[in-house]
Length: 610
Image (cartoon, rainbow, N blue to C red):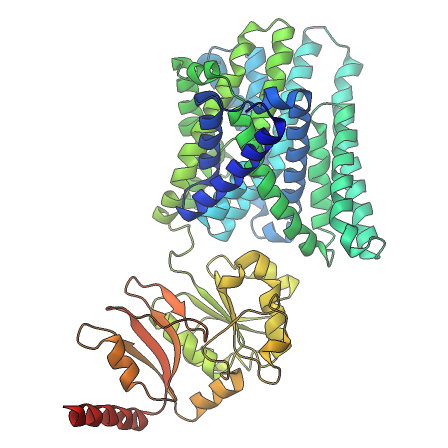
């Protein structure tokens, strides 16, 4: 495959296909991508992206990492961590310092690196980074606090790990007398410049967006251009400071609370998925077979084991002493620390520089880094979900339901779901509207679901299913449309429009209509008020689907089906009814007397037929 076009096609296709395979079979995406790259690269020898792309290989990787890091930092709103800022601050400062020292000593005594090279690479190995941690968090669905700490650590420490390696390198040169004090202090000046450049660029872009100085169709492209400009400008002053600049830019914009930032963020998330998929395949496919064989050296293996089981847990447990984190959270955070793209790319840079400067032991840095990256990606990728469940730090396997709109019907529906073991929450901005749910013991949240305050005070993780059931058709459509990027259209439902015709809405607006085209919220609430009840009917070998259909009153309205495995499937008009033995049909039925009449009619009809 010598054609550059074919190589690029293979890389992109493999990356996205790996993401799909990971989603389909519930596997860690980064593991699948890494294996795919290894197979087509050093194992089968089909492609070598680094050889095909030549001089543009490293710049492409660097620019992609800059975009990914900026997109990740756009999610770092300080309000998210105001309730647990102490443990987070400790983890990214004291924890990172402990990991640097302990990791460097492990590299020296176990992997056999000289102290100089060990302290350079030890600084780099404190990074986790959004390219690896964000896919794992998306897969594992942790509870909010450990997920937020891992996310913030990955994004904030990512540029500092690279800078720490640069600092150690500059310090070694200064201590060895190869550079002057002024040249050494230039490192700090470049870091300050990068930070100020990022903050200034972020503030400037934010103000331009707020004041409408950039048209809607140019917001994302303009932001891309500025991010790349900031990265390259800063990196030209000193290597690796560009990562610090784009991180500062993203954090600045995230905390300006720009109204339209969510639209930009969702677009950039899609780009980040594509970039992460592509560059993981590019890097692993570009490795040499000699590098793969070198990772089986006993020194490298012992170093990886020490990083996994001693250095990382030690740094987290010591740094979080006296914080509100419990032992379960410390255990999970102390185990999860996958290394990724930044570690691979920066270690490759230092391997070349240090070898040129006479440090011959630096030739094993690529193998050492890949061993750590692949080991952490595999072990942490496959264990994060299992460990989170064991420690009760994962969201429930059974998807919870968030119902927006407080009234008599949603209260009864919430009670039924709760009794079926589904975590349920009813949200409404009116305390009065929530009185029905409170009487039935259904958890409630008072607040506007679209409010920015709600985003940081309500944990949406346990509720991957949302039902908009307010009395305002347009508000229901707005709610479901707003949450499409986060939840997905197939998990967003709404009651039928009351005054408007559903056909009047564009297909991209609103969620899936539940129950029946005529079952608007007023009709549903009126049924409850006139004595209709929620009834549960189990399908058995003796009472089959046909029997249920025959005995079901005409006014009966199917709400959802509880499958034999405990999962819930909401009923929509366009869905075909398919019931199996062990399923339970939950429906809104007329009062008991009406049910008895319908049953008697069916029994009478059967007797007449026989």
